[in-house]
Image (tube, rainbow, N blue to C red; front, top):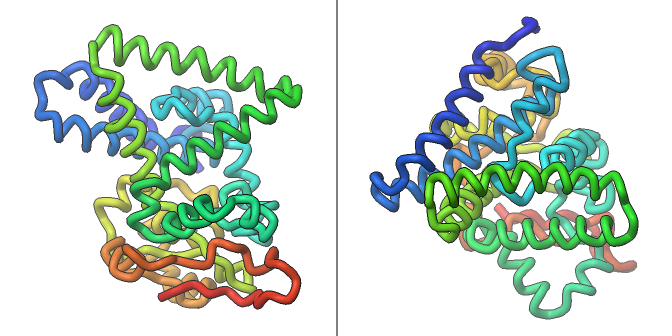
Length: 306
């Protein structure tokens, strides 16, 4: 790899410039455009954060972390995202609700504790429509509750991360609400919530349980627009096989090795996000209970729906 990946430097400058311009000129632009573009920029920034935590665009981790650190999404500290995501890359534990921080599955005990309403919401969240509508709220609230419990239990390292993150949030909100005079509802709904929803679209069909861990990671082909938004992590099996490959090299490498990658993941391939929507818009992507954490005597087979 080069000492500096200028493609990613240009990408970072583009994303932050779009954010500053969009927030500065928001009151001269159509409201719908600001809403949609705001969500796009925050989701794009999340993709940039994912890129830098894998060692891009320089060989200096502190520089990479500085590029990804600004908390445009407000709710997710970069340091916690980085720690959890790198743990997620232990592929032998993919989808396991205890070992994989990014798993959307429940253990049987957690499922029982949800109660009837909680289980109904969790089942709705397994559909694509539910994931886009309530998924961001479920994800953010669950994350904040878990983080609050850790801090209240005396985790000083976590508290220090949140303190530094809070400083960044103050800077972002001062720019948005005071300097740019944007209504807070617009930033929270358009930039933060829609940005989280777009990110949930990416992660919705990325993983599902299979006995062979190499078959737990999906591929979403033929999606140039969302491919750019997600920095080609829609070709997700390649990222898990070679996580250090920079975003701009993924499409060519995927075309070169497509047959091998599709064979490796057992043919878990979607023809764009329209194909994902056709299959799962109102249908469950999978049983929300993890097959290896069911109650004794229950069927442990995956029941992913096509």
